[in-house]
Amino acid sequence: MNTFPNVGDRLGNVNAWTLRTQVVHGQHMTSHEIVLLVRVRRLAKSGEAQALRLAAGLSLREVADAVGISHSNLWRWEAGKRAPRGPAAVAWARLLDELATAQKAAAA
Image (cartoon, rainbow, N blue to C red; front, side, top):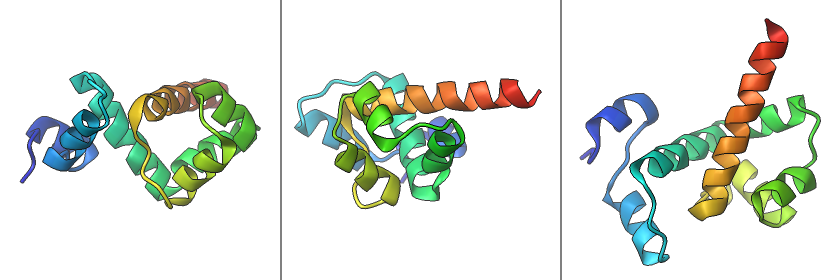
């Protein structure tokens, strides 16, 4: 069951597990941050996150440093070995949004 139908229609299923994970880890996220989390998970799973990073000419280490995680952790996220979570995942989502916007502007 989709807990947030409007979000689910646009970004995929947001369920109680996603929400509970944020509470269990002691993180209180806004609904906007949860939407970003769902989106970044989809980008990572599809390979789009890595494609955006590579197209921008950024290394794993540069992006990892920018979002406050180790480069090996970012590699696990991009490879689909671990699900992005927490404040660093939200920061990564925002960075990816900026990269996508910059790429669209450069293409125009």
